[in-house]
Image (tube, rainbow over all chains, first blue to last red; front, side, top):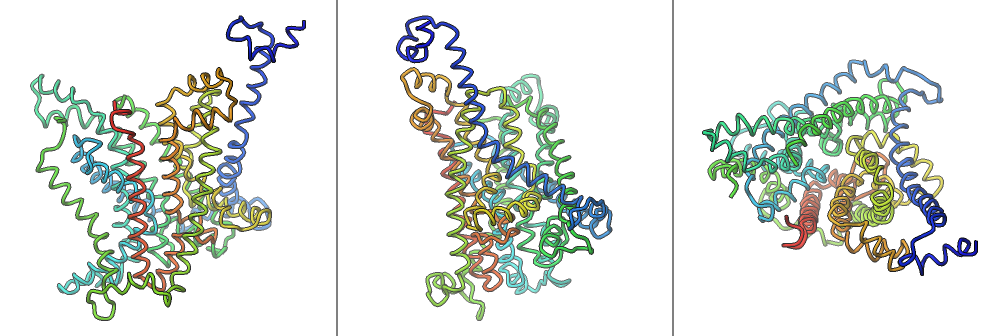
Length: 311
Length: 266
């Protein structure tokens, strides 16, 4: 009796030497397991308030009008020709820049293959890719304005050479002007996401191919490309989702008009009534998350398959 | 030498072509900051103007925004170090079964566009404004979510490289409580991951524009945008400075992540 009561105190002193009576030990574990669950609460609450709630709110707000009554009118607006056009613009812009970015990025990865990870060139490319792919945003827009804007350095050079790139108007501030800046952040993202897959190609496979009488070309057609295809496709999807949800570059470059979905959301958020509807931002956000959600779901499916070769 | 590697000529062709595409806008931006809008000639006036008291009011939005961004960076790093990291220790040590779910959740912000998040954050920040005011630092709660995937990956990588279970049990055997174990046993062993997570959080916060601009907050990026409407040269200069700064940050992260030579290399 007394030893059981004094158990927890004695534990500290005696437990290394004496086999433990089971009751206090179990009680201790239950108590600390309780604490272990409570420890998850702060982060969980944080995620609920700042991740789950905003996501749900942004999607749900599309189903309510200003007075809080349920309505399908906003979601119905997704079928409006103006909105459909912005979704179409976003789609082709994202697809085009994703394909170009994926191909060019894959070439860069191929050129970097065999360069040691500690090589200064490689570390510089890695860091530069990170800057341009993930943290550029507004700044990339300014770099391109300084290059190809009306006062841009390249514009002026070409003008001096007698070439007026803006003969049909300053397209750099419109939808086509987004293509180059988007490729500018898509290529680095491809380098970041595709490099691990390419580095995982085993030199032994090349040796086996040579031993069996294959050539350098047959290595790529028979082994390299089939093994890399899922990774390439997954990266392509990631690039598409990335361009589709990108806002900053477009917002800084296209100061007027709302040619793509994120800019349409800006218009809906700042002017309240687009197409004479309230809470359209919520409906647009819903449309956007459906597209990006499907793409990212496919991405994770393919990525899982691609991971087989990267062990 | 890796036999799979491209031939030297392929390397050069790809390197030169892609390199040109990436260098032209950066070099153009640099040249742009040296160009004289009146004569088209070369001038240092724009750079000198950075320190000209007469132009101080022009740069006001950028300095205010930069100050706010630095505060946000500090608070965001605090969220990463004092909320995310301890929770990850807990999940790894006590709830290993929760790890796949936890990973799924913290990587979610990659799939949820910031522009979607901001639609739902607007009403939440309206409430926060009523409760604790509209101080710049409050935005850090939203930034904490956007840096989650980056910070998680950095920290998890170093947690995978360290036997946290043995370390914490050793600490407890020697009589240490959990706070001591977290601060004096685990944190020093995870310092590379924690440092990388902190630096990448700083980079994310300095580059963030979407949430801040749509919630009408003043941060570094919105400051550059405001100034660019008045003076294109200054936005070009700050663009270059910021890109170089983040580049250096990421170089350091690359160093840190790779660890000391001969130790974490396999």
